Length: 387
Ligand code: F3S
Image (cartoon, rainbow, N blue to C red):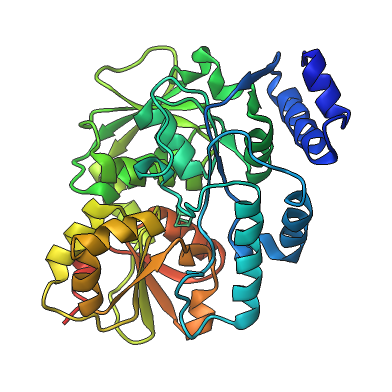
């Protein structure tokens, strides 16, 4: 990969060890992508925040790196493992203390206090056509597919390196040719809700490694369905983008997804509705105001029979508070988490739950990988757990 003289000097550590390390990460990634050069990015979104994933090694790295490193472009960050602003009494003190140190390290580097996996709904919404460097697969796939932004599915480390240098290798989905579909799923099924859209996407992502997936036979997804699709693709495969095509494509691999396959997949990921030993986790990806409004309307005047958690960002929480949604959901027994992802934290162990209900395919996928009995349920089914 060609580097400018300035980039060479930065790589050699002339402007500090942290910047040199960041350039070394980008050169290594650029080599894997066969990128000819580095290009500037408009923003970065960094994952690697949840202490449940990071562990002590990640915490130590961040504390060391953040002594010197500073971000050079607007940078948002993924959720924590717990709500560090109002943690529940069941959160172990050592987890909370370490999570707060991770938060401090990111803020020291100049990252925005976003702690959200849907940065595009408030803190980080680059104009279409911008090249960015975003980790968090659901966010980067959404950015490519819906916002018209260009980003590879970065790792936490490569996005952090881009945040510090302001650059990314010009490879992968930053190349126009890779944004053309390399696979098409013909959907011969009626998609009734965002979960159905997510299931079609989950199926397709497991069948291909093409950068871009085309879906034929479905209407343009609304924002909630698009979030489900992006998250499901991120969980099940390596693709970076999806498009909705009016026509069948020639010269690409094709599969058909029938109504029967849809029902079967929905049953495989679901399970019977039980109250005893259950909890509910909603908002994977994080809920925005629309999803909060839908839930609030559905459960108004009723109270949750099982511990029910809703994940959103601190800024969306603030807006929801002004709209009265926080009050109405709280009075229905919903605990609203700010900037926290329980999908990846051991909440089942902390509060002794046997099953988790969620309306997120991604959450079921990851929790089952951790041997948690996670069951997919629509919001309508989850509302049955309120009395
Ligand atoms: Fe967000 Fe956590 Fe799900 S980061 S997409 S809520 S796994």
